[in-house]
Length: 334
Image (cartoon, rainbow, N blue to C red):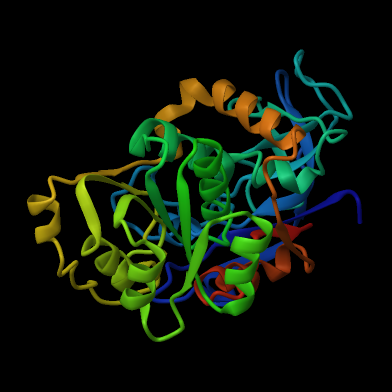
């Protein structure tokens, strides 16, 4: 029914993987916008690894989602019933709208997008926060030089796939790490990486040595764990490590050991820096400009993995991120 919202509200904090029991998913009355607000009819919801951390009651870069609150999520949709001077009915927008069919917004942090240039789901993927994360991780954190070797973990994912392509645009050698022959072939044949190592192949270090004969100058880390530890052992002098995510540990119930090759940071004088895309909010227009230009010029190959099921499918579809069940930017169609 068009006059009913459906929302996923956090009911209980999880231990391990998220389940349906952690959420109240139910119909709600459709809210009306007040002065200076508008309502968004959501079409697609971005599913991101960080969402698992957002439901933990722990100190982080953003406050945890509160019990009883709509689950936090970036989404894209169409403005309707606007009482805001800068947003009109029919505008397509992205913002932190949550896991629900409809959202009320005052416009803070909301960006208008042009669906004539790319489909809605792309504006919450390669041309949205994942693309900007890749852009800032390279341009502002790792700062690779032409000719250097950039290694990207989770290379077929939403962020990693863009990282390697930007690295190539910057004149670097891009080496990906992905799970399985199909994803590795996608990384090299469609995304244009110079090589891709299958971390499920059983010889991670040997394969990385073969793929990086001159060592690793830049590591763009999305995974952590054994992959991170192995890459540390192959870093070159004054290498840079941009830590974007540690998805291998997000559902762990106990502290994750390591890294055991921590000594490499000292011996090789590595620059290791964690970052969040929100650190660069004042530079979003710069990133959007470059990503848009590269996309229009055919320099960015972007893939979305769009799943049906609406709000009710949220917990199960989100967990695909932690079991390597998705292929490309994971999006839930509302």
